[in-house]
Amino acid sequence: MSDSSLLNQLIESLRRLPGIGPKSAQRMAFHLLERDREAGRQLALAMAAAMERIGRCERCRTLTEHPRCQICANARRNVNLLCIVEQPSDIVAIEQATNYDGLYFVLGGRLSPLDGIGPEELGLERLEARFNEPALDEAILAISPTVEGLATAHYISELARGSRLRLSRIAHGVPLGGELEFVDGGTLAHAFAGRQGL
Image 1: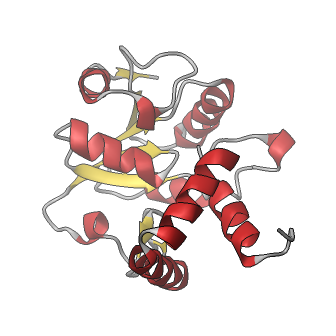
Image 2 (image 1 turned 180 degrees about the horizontal axis):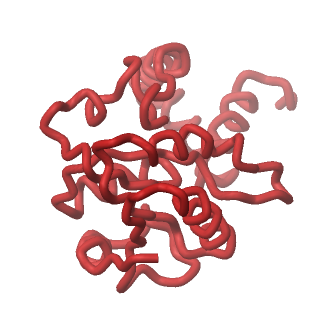
């Protein structure tokens, strides 16, 4: 089989997904080609449409097809609370595990100078502007407790220093070095309820 064959291109494309190794990618490709070509076609159409039409919410930076996501557009959300998360998947985890009804801000990562991720890449100037919104009373940092996460939290706490809002951070039960999307719902709900001021 030639390295540039369509089969190898499909396998290599599937390998780019997180958690998919060479054997899993090969199994997926063979399954789609041998047993479920219609599912493969539907997957290709859905992926093409998603890549074309999904962008970032103009307010919170999560993924959405619209200028504003469903959460930011929902007038029933509590505008006094802002939860700052690393990734859109963290919003899903919090929404499923807690009764949090405030708004969000998605950083899109953590500060990591070695990887070329600085304040500009995380939209921290936009976050600082949100800190000065009159309705906002509390900002909750729901950032993974890794070295980069702690540095990001510290940077954000410095940004908030000049504002009147209360800054808190989730605590209790989120393991050091852990990723929010992998924490079970009960632990995440307990951590959210037991957040502490910075």
